[in-house]
Image (cartoon, rainbow, N blue to C red; front, side):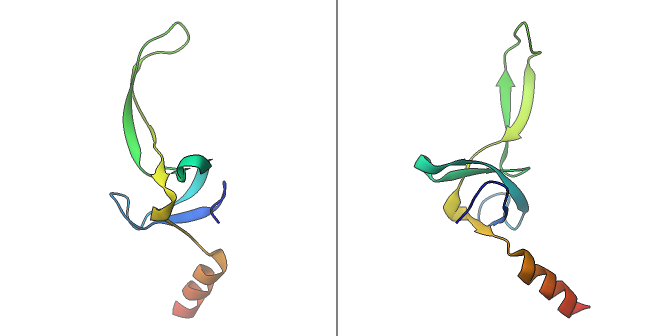
Length: 82
């Protein structure tokens, strides 16, 4: 089960084979936000508190397109290659 804070790898899409950490989960829609994955540009309007402009931020990706990265197995594979 994918939870916040776990490392995952992307299986499909423009960020295929990239790894990242889950930063947010939307359970009703089966979607998750992964750090530095599925970046989109958002146009933000200027307000009294914030300056406007074009901001890059993470967007949700479907959980079926993610796979947990097992820290134990990846460390064993790298040791075996040495």
